Image (cartoon, rainbow, N blue to C red; front, side, top):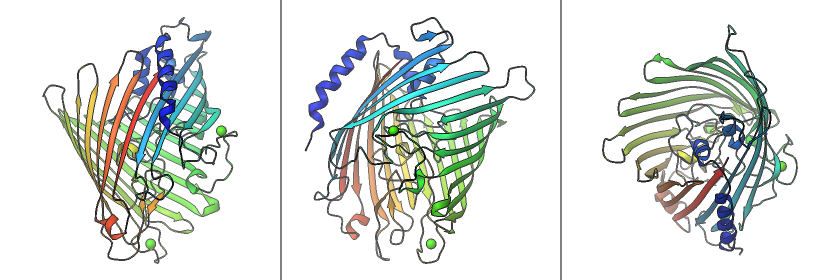
Length: 470
Ligand SMILES: [Ca+2]
Ligand SMILES: [Ca+2]
């Protein structure tokens, strides 16, 4: 077995070299800032160096390679250690240890106030893995140098009667709390779409409409729209998303309609939903609900999701924030009734919501979370979270992981719904030139694993991640 430990000196050397370069640590942290509604730092980086560089209006620094053209780059390294992830030590991939590298190089062209062009290349690699394929398409671990983003933004001038913006090309889509649509920056290749996004309005009141096609990653070739064996990677995604934070003071309100379409496999999943995110002093309350109709695999599709969450920020040193959440995604309780009832999780950031070990999607799931997050000295922070997972339809529908892949499908009415619980501990330390994040997760299996005769009933996860960019 190849061990990632042999790569450690290479990683350390890389850090030291990068720390010696005149990078602007501030923009790294900026790039790490959570998106709206996403509360933890495992949340996406921004569009990488290209986008963060566009904010550098000091001008005339060395990043400005031509008039109006800015260079940006970002390197992310993450080692992961996974133990018992298949709950069976005779299965390949039960234990994995690997190093992920992701390098992005972008150019931002801003000839005037109304036009921006972005081209960003990405090289993503995995080292030291045992059972993970670095060549299979679609791939989320590896992609040899390829176009990650390439788009043109055109905005109406400030004096225009209608504030309108159009983005077209290879783009990232991010909406709401990213429970259904996210750039999924946690994953090594991240997620991009080819499409057009139109936004009407500005400030706190916008309506966006988009038409797009997911871009599956082919590690050794150009990423295009060739069909893959996975319906989610072959799909078109279209939507209309309205957001308003002025209707109710202190609250962001959103409503949306989404369509995921994969004609070859008979999918046309419509999602209609709404979301609210309100802050009242130290309290924050948020909720989201969505209903799905249409067709899945040629059958009628009827499914639901709901999220209710709240947090309280205390006045104690470090301002610890105590949070709780309930999340549910419907399952299919009768595989023989001709109606598909498993919620279609679409293109989410499940990592930050249903356990950092990525063992769950919002499909056939009921999830309760309690968390505490606190600031520590030197701008570092600590988060501890506990999650409980039960299946909505344990004997009829499957247990789905964060990528909506089936972990296990149990059969029979006597299977417990209690899959287990997970503890995640995450420490973030922003150093001068780089940001550092490490985490440990432990999954403790419940009665479901006993009833379904799992060989092993617990799993462990550790990671260490650094991001440097300019
Ligand atoms: Ca490629
Ligand atoms: Ca059914």
